[in-house]
Structures are given as structure tokens and as C-alpha cells.
Length: 154
Image 1 (cartoon, rainbow, N blue to C red):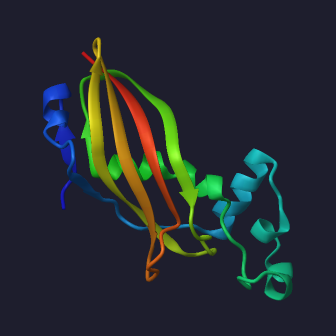
Image 2 (spheres, one colour):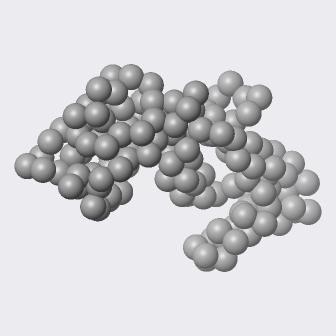
């Protein structure tokens, strides 16, 4: 599936109620987990101590921070859709977020996205996107959420 390109509210509105697409897989590496731990000051051993996880973790390896998984959504979203002619795009909110399953180090994840609704609020477009983060070779999703963007089209 190729990337969707939209240039205005009317073009985006055509996708309401439809699946927009699926991103490519990316690998969540230990280096990325460590850098995220440094950036957020969250050095909990289950994320950064590979030796300890071998004996004490039920997963027997490190896992990505839930918020690390969440933080790659904009990158993966950009693989699905290109929204042009927006002079400002705002991450407005996240609703109904659920972390369903941990992402083990070196797992590959991608997102599947659908446009649930689009509302014109006096020139600002409020888009609600249903997102599921899939883990390669795993039936259960890493997370599910309704993400909300505000697009200020020219």
C-alpha cells in the first residue's frame, strides 16, 4: 500500500471510517531503549539490565518502555499519510490508550491506522485516528489508542 497524500480537509474527509494503511516494521533495539531511559530518567531494570532480566523477568529479556512505543507513533504515522498544506499540526491528545503486551528488545513493530472521525472546528481540522501497534509474529497488539491531531490547513 502506498502512502496517502492529502492536501486539504475535503481530501482527508474522504477517508473517514476507512483504514488508512499500515506502516513498515521498525526494530526496537536495546540502544534505543537505553537512550529513551536516559532521556526520561526511567532506568528501571526491566528495560536496561539484560543480565538481571535473564533470571528475574518473566520475559527473560529487556522490554521497551510503553512510552517509547508510544513515542514512535508519529514516525510510523508519517509512513502512512502525508498531510500537505497544514501550516500547523498539533498532537492534541491520546484517548483510550491501552498497553496490551510488552515489546521485547529487538522486536519489530508497526502501526495500523484508521480515520475514525474528522471535524472542522472553525478552520481547525480535528482528526481522530484509531491506531494499533502490532508486534511481528504476535497476535496480540502492543498498544491500541485513539490519537487526536489538529491540522490547521492553509
